[in-house]
Length: 155
Figure 1 (spheres, rainbow, N blue to C red):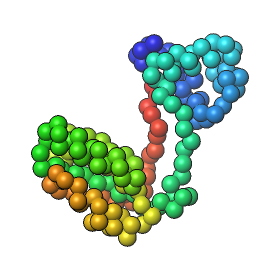
Figure 2: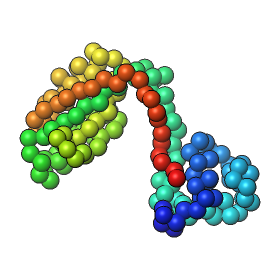
Figure 3: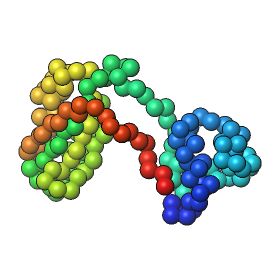
Figure 4: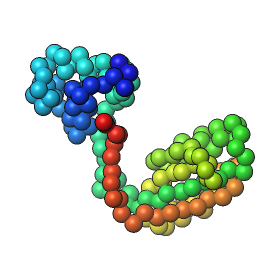
């Protein structure tokens, strides 16, 4: 099943699972108006097709004390495969970096960094991140509030 072939029932299943990934097949079947057997089969097909990539708990970072998010744009001094690979390996080792995207445009990477506060971010930035080899420039932006949050686009 290719993603373009997901029908309305598949999309309904995905919407329900996105709201509650722990729901039982019976509850899911009731929610989408099918019996349990075809729903179970469809979920398995969505998993095998790579449309459902896993199941996880949604965590409130602030409830754990991580109340400070910063978007960090990074420009490397060279945009060759080796430099990109070294930077990406370094970023993966930092628990403060929760998201990292390779970008087009005037910056090479966009990161979301999460810390307990401004002082922790400064310690991370100055003490560790600026020491990553190959980083030419860094620009930080502090978000004021999240306007919209989503897990994945469905339909």
